Image (cartoon, rainbow, N blue to C red; front, top):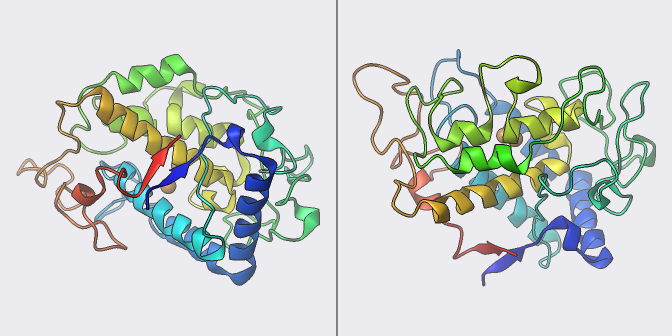
Length: 289
Ligand code: CU
Ligand code: CU
């Protein structure tokens, strides 16, 4: 049965409670941290050798689509009615948004150590001990807006600039690609200061704390952010029905650029035996409301 992923701002308080309870149960049983480890393992950057499937690469969208599906299935084994909500950060763009309320994600980190003090994932509540962090503390950290060097969430205009690009991705198929929707949305640029981060990356930067690196899955808002990113890929496809939905179609050519490091359309994306081609549409599994 096709299920629905909802905008988090439209969830009833009962729906929020069931989503949060399923998250806490996965955490309690240790299954949540397995997702954190997988993401850390696949967080490799441009300079590294070998196949790169999750970030700075064309399969950024299908890899995270599959990752979210695995996570959603784990949630649904706890409570079959739960789906991953999405956060439209072009609309709900302040620390006062209901997303950050005590019934859903909880709020910002405190000034001294960036520890989240409110909501179900607050350090003092004791239900969300960080075990797979890349920092010392074992509590969840956030630092909204990066006060020491302020940054805003991406705007609708910035998002539109990415969505307008009719080409899915382009050589050299990494974080330096200046053409193509994928990197404009994933958001690596050669700019300086806050112009360095666009769209998807900028959201990670704005939240700060654990959301900054490979261990970003430690912050449950990761899933709501990536659910929206997944929706945006769908929106791009609908906007450009005559574009190739995924590139490259074949492994990049003899010029050697990123050869062997990129999953082309019909090549598997580890850790799963699944090809980008199999994940171009989600409509038989779920839809977005
Ligand atoms: Cu990721
Ligand atoms: Cu991300």
